[in-house]
Image (cartoon, rainbow, N blue to C red; front, side, top):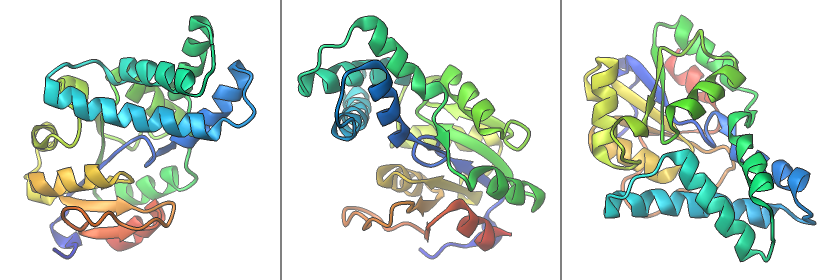
Length: 228
């Protein structure tokens, strides 16, 4: 389905990789551990974290996203042969409260806000993580609210979470556009009845599995151009 800006009244944004850069975890790794190349460890950490959320949904074994990231970090360090103390692992984990914000976040959401769109964050992050992310990104005055997977104790792409977001925003689900850099998040939104916008920040190919996004944007400023 082609993207239809005329039926969009509310925009929800994923958080990690969409508003803030999870690749910034690499710097935290080097600050608290003797690591020559943090990139593969950071990648393993992120990949394992996503895998844990998907498995948790199927097993109905919920942990908060912060706890899942703690487990994924422990695995990533062990998988790369690193012995890091519990205290240092906690210090590394705290980077999730202050991840680097993408340059286009504030200005683009401000444009959407001024154009009359209600804007929300819809994320796997638990409320404490989202509160710190919104504050760190400087968008508290532009975002109506944050909607956390913790409210249902289920993670994306469970369709119930997107339907819950529609209820929380008071918006018919087909008037919602969900913006994410994660392919499965975009597909989850589309499956639930939203318009799915893929934020292709890294110029990577779209996954051939499942539905195509309603819109592909290379940045939030591109999305703001389409909507405003």
